[in-house]
Image (cartoon, rainbow, N blue to C red; front, side):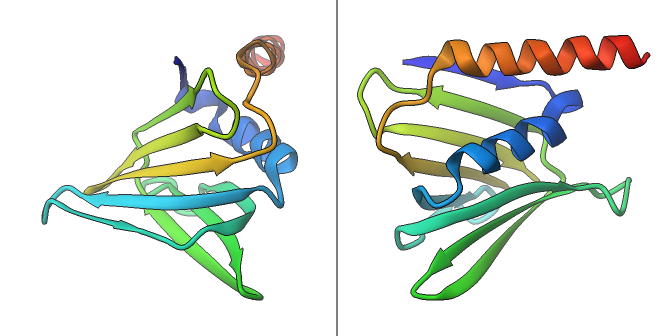
Length: 135
């Protein structure tokens, strides 16, 4: 299994690209509440998007939107602190783990093929070089 830590400075671009590439893919959201030591899992649903919301700069959040039985459901992850992409050696077993205020959320990705680690790294390198040029 490969793990890729996604630096905070590229989250907006990463989630925009991730959402574009995985829109419509089946996902299951598992949330572990650190305060209560409880874990809950959603039904399998279609991914619509994951967006970084910086409207309140002191309280960033991630808005994860899925479609389940014709209903849009939104999971809001407050103050994300770490994002890690786990790439399995087997198709259909990749996941995205997000640590945020009081929760660890894992998005199990049920895709047709596994995520290409080299493709993700190229995307991250491209985002980093664009950010370097803008500085």
